[in-house]
Length: 492
Image 1 (spheres, rainbow, N blue to C red):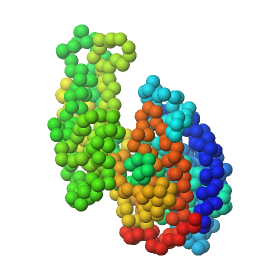
Image 2: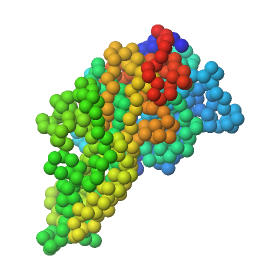
Image 3: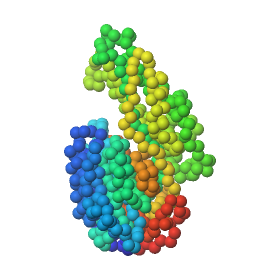
Image 4: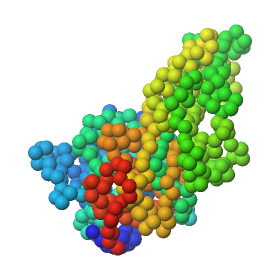
């Protein structure tokens, strides 16, 4: 199938695509905040309606125990989500690969609001960038695939590959309901490969494909002392302040060399050969690049590793929040009854989040002073993933980047976590091609998040070529471990 008409369509409708992306970003879909549940439902309905209008079939908004999942497909066969009995499901003839496209429409909280130059949910174009919460993570990046699908369907009436879309509203809180959904519906979600765009490039003209991600473990440590807040004049010096005790516990989470102090934490951490570390040194960002992106002058962390290695092949522990005592203006002389720390651990092969959870709990119990009580609560976890860069789907993506950005991509490790990627690998047994379109300075998760519009348009072109490249593959060539992509013919 020629891509020429689809490319022409996408180029002719860029302004409308941008206007629709702005409409998408306006929904305040903060999944962590219960007051936004209605906005999330409205956004899910909007996205489902949009998928139907561009030509996708069997579009459904599927309730979960939390925020809804959106499913749509365009295949030469039906699925259970179409409502047809299983006996009516027919395989494609002739067979062609099936691609599962994943994305998330929920976003991070916007705090601190005072640091935003424009309202977080009033998308604003300044120069070549679209500013707004979710503009890049992940609405803008996800929308590149939606617009590529539209360009093919509207220009040619078909796609070069079977496509299934799976979009969720809980990625930013660990995908607690999507993972069970994938397990329950693995037959209906069966594919030859998955693709997700929720990662970064090295720079504006330096595309990258992530082939590894760290796992994640999100916990809360609560420390309690007296039954209620106490007057610090009456009890200060006589009662162990729970907030102080929590700080003492937090101070013991790392040793003086930047290593996590939990006993046996590193027992299963994989050691990488010098060749792999050499490749990372050659292709990844330098220490200077990472420090410049972070806006700091001096790095910190585990001795003996570059900053890129510390953020990808080594685990980490971050205290993401501390809550306790009086937070308002002025002074309140009080000993708080409780204090809370939010802790995020990033894990690497071959660490198991459940095992690390147990080790962490044992350590917190050991270092908690006898004068207070501690409780650990687990919110979410995801396993680390490692994929084969030589897989045909990865090589198809590399081809697509060369066409979309005019430069070959670098295969990178990511320090972040997309929880569903490990589920796709373990449950569906397919690799996920992580085609990043974000820039290092797009301020993801921070005030003034933005999406570089040239990356938006080039991302659509890249997705078009990726669909074409995937459509040229046959099922046997897509089996894991296959070297190269064989002989593929692509229409211009």
